[in-house]
Image 1 (spheres, rainbow, N blue to C red):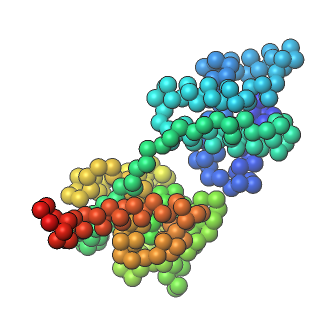
Image 2: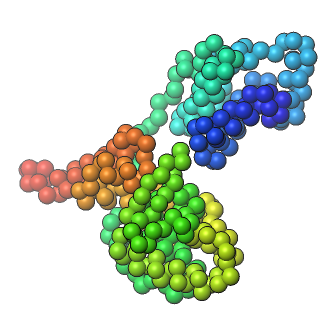
Image 3: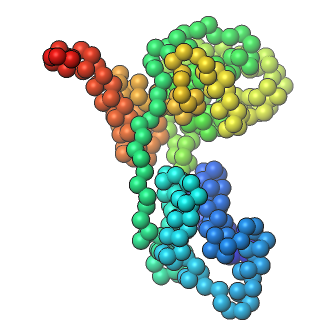
Length: 320
C-alpha cells in the first residue's frame, strides 16, 4: 500500500508497533487486513491499481475516508470474507484490525465515530484446547537424552515447551542472557512486551547444563547469544520450531491429531490444572493478560472429571 497507507495506514502500523507494542506478526496481519479492505472497496486485485484509483479520486476531489470506512462497507467486507470461506474466528480477527484502525482515526479527528463498532461479529464455535496424554509425554520425556547436538537441541525444544508453557515465538527468541542458572528461572519477554519469570524445574535444569556444554563444543567460535541455534549456527525461527516439534512427536503413540508447539503449551497448562495448580499461577506462567484467557483450560479439566466420574462412580455406571 502506498498512497493512502502512507497517510494513514503506515502511521497506524507504527502506532501499534511503538505504542501498543503489538508483535511483528500482528503488525503484518493488520497491514494485510487494511490492504484487503481497501482493495475490496475499490474492486481491484493489486496495489498499483489501488494507488491509481485513489490518486484519481483525490485529484477529482471525490475521495473521502469517512465514506469508505462506513458500517455498510465494513459489513459488506465481512460478508465477502465469509462467502469466500473464511472462518468466524478469522473474520473476527479482521474486524478487530479494522475496528482498531477506525478507533485510531477517531482519535486523530479523521472519523467522527468508529463504524466497525456497529458491525455484528459472527459467532465462533467454541473449541476446547487439544492436549496430549500425560503418559505419552512422560514416556517421551523419560527417554535417554541424545549425545548429538542436533538431536539434543530438538529434544530440549520439546521438553522446554512442555516444562514451561512458552510460546513458539518465545522459544525462537530465547537468549542466553534470559536464562538465570543461578536463580533457576527464565526471564521471558512475551506478548505486548510483558516480562515474566518461569521457574526451571530440576530435571530440565540438568538437561540445560548438558545442552549448553554441547552448544559450546559445537559452535566454539559463535558470538551469537541465541539459546538455540540451527544446524548452521543461526537463531531459530517460527517454522523451525514447528518443524522440530513435528519431527519429534509426529507418529509416536499418544500424539495423534495436530502436532504443534501450541498443543504442547495447552498440554502444559491442562496438566498443571489437573495436578492442582491455581488458575492465577497458571495465568502468570503462561503470560496471559487476563484470567479469561486461562479459564478455557478449566473446561478440559471438567471433561477429565466427567470421564473419571462415569468410570468410577457406582451410580454413573450403566444400570446404576
